[in-house]
Image (cartoon, rainbow, N blue to C red; front, top):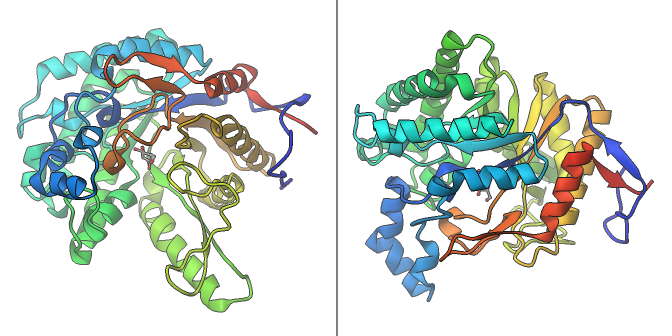
Length: 419
Ligand code: BGC
């Protein structure tokens, strides 16, 4: 791998690194984070007295932490697809919301289904390859009240919902994502308690692990029953763990253990039920032997304090190539209020994706997270991941300067690079 320097004017260059023909360039969103007006387990938690008290205690404005109307994409999806089109992308990833489709147990909402059909039609009209996410951490209330993913019947409930989605939307979908980052849901929902259902219960976490792997496997089979040629995966958040010192055995072992539990275990269990691998890359951990077991150099950090470490995407792609499946980067993005970091962030990550391809890794696409500034879960609306800003009152969308850089990469099917 050719490393790049992380300073200097390295971008006004001359050669375009061309990606393979048919490479997918896209943007990613999720239903809950952009649509608005959804009532599910997350919206319940945002309105709960415990959550409101916690925010007030920190002196934070609760308005900023209430998903509410989000980006109003429920009504503005056509405008959003036009924005995505203006970036010269040829693919798009978006989600559908289970809580809308099945607001009461066993009852389908015909209006919601018709709505999503129009959304798919509009995406197709724009010529996009469609990546559809079926579940992105949020659950219908009735499902959560019955115990959510900790209960065995969750698998059947999910399968029933997937059956409906395949029947109604299957003809539009090019790539399915059954579950978004299941390990993040398990970690935050059942171990650290930061996401609904806000538990700290390792035994339940373990149950949820098995239920989610089963849910994916059943969804996989069901989709293939109707569409034998379908392409089905999950998105895996794969972090790049490296020992701070290769000579420190404790750090080496710790890094391996973290990699195994956070990155590998889930994928390994569903390995036979993956047509491709959807990768979400955000994090690097330089593992040290003492608490908190992570000490990054943090040469550059984003608005949320996360280290920017583009080279890490190369390493996780190399790791994923051991599964011998096509890989699509379905999320990679940066919270950057001033839009000063984003253009280089994209170029540098795209550069390392290119290096991975040169080294034989079958990467077939790169999707930036996110098309719009949106609701960033427990951090509310403050983090700005979008290529487009969204006015929270008028919902007007405005392209940021970095959007033009990404659009150029997509148009050229490659990034400019100084050699
Ligand atoms: C999630 C997104 C989230 C993004 C940025 C990913 O882990 O899938 O929903 O907005 O990270 O934190």
